Length: 309
Image (cartoon, rainbow, N blue to C red; front, side, top):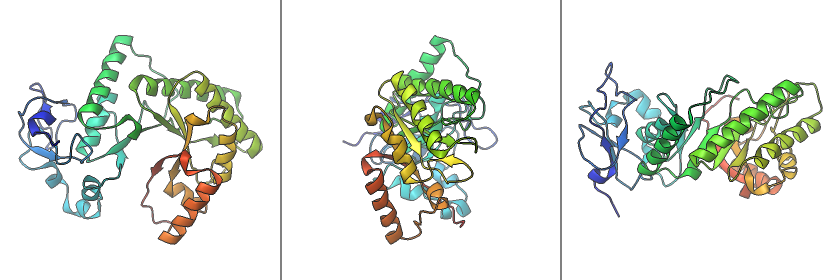
């Protein structure tokens, strides 16, 4: 049943106005009233087909504010009218609970995000009350904007190396992964994606793969429900996970196979030698994925429009 705009969203009275010609990203959007100044079309997954949210302080529709040169190249119109769950990686400026709002404003039907600063080992332990407020706000925003928890894909820190030969790095990786997966649990998010790691040219590939699996098993044993997703890599340097066979080797060593999956990154697999430049080749690659790993393990796809060879 199609909901009215009144049922869809509200901008709170204390929301800030436009800054420097752009909407203030700190505003909060809730359901239940129709005090708006402008509407923004969002994806059909967001509550209902044709539903809208509105932004404060604009005299044009949000989609009209996109420069024509960008709009011609973007896929935003296709995403908004698609039945597929397509989205983007969104920021968490202002708090992790703002991520669903940013995703909805961008026309996403699914989205990815970092759970914390992805370039530091430092873990900020929030006051329990403050953390709970953010988590509950995140959940409410997901419900109100129509995002299913299984269509949200957090990305692990870029520093992680689950197969690290250095014991100190390996320990930091395991502590950080455990912290991030537990965050997913608290948020109700069902998936957690990460780059498997690298041997750093200090151990064999097989040993590195074994260590990655060991890391995943350690994290799974101390958590519940969240599926840990291995991202396909580009086979650059000493990274592992660049071939379907390597990913299968890791999966074979995971104790609970209901909680492991794969994210197929199109840029990475192309760089690793999987030709997906046309329909026939793409189908062949996906058949190979199914034969080696199994499509039942495919949990997400990172789409990339890179045209580089």
